[in-house]
Every structure is written in structure tokens, then in C-alpha cells.
Image 1 (cartoon, rainbow, N blue to C red):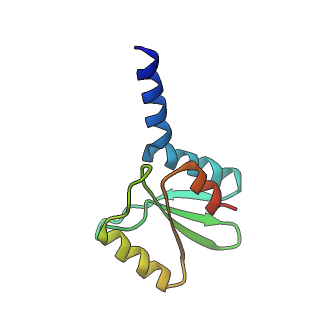
Image 2: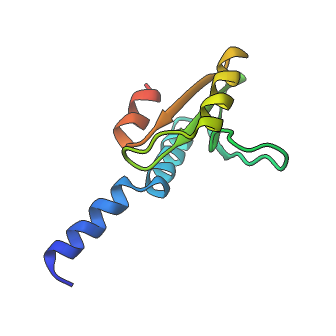
Length: 102
């Protein structure tokens, strides 16, 4: 592999949904919370992660690769969760993860 290929692989890994999701999970754990992978057997479009915090607080997070946007059904589900009083975020970078965890 040449240096350019290695750089491309490294940059892709840093921007990928998987990498961002792993980073989110590590940060939440370090803060004393749980980052649960959420999957519904009956409905689609819910955010990827349900963060549970000491004191009974819950936060939903949709993780995307850098520059990607939620689909229409995801926007609908997130709006519904917000209308119920939940905090809901979309993150597409490690910097955005840091922002929402402040």
C-alpha cells in the first residue's frame, strides 16, 4: 500500500458511522452512563443509541457517517421523541459527540 492509500483508509475509518458510534459509547461509559444499541422489532427509524444516565435521564442519538443526513422516517421518529420531552441528537463526527456530551 502506498502512503495515500493508508491515509484514505485512516480518514475513512475516522469518519465512518461505526467509528463514531464506538467513540460515543466509550465516552458515555467514561462518564458513568450506558450507551445501548437500540433496535425495534416492530418499527423502523428510531435512533441508533439510547443513552442512559445516572439519575434516570435518557438521551437518544442517531449516528451517521460524516455528512450523511437522517432519512424521512428517522426525522419523523426523532420529532415524535422530542415531542415527548426526550433529548434527541444526530451526530456525524467525533466533534459533534463531544458537543452533545458537554
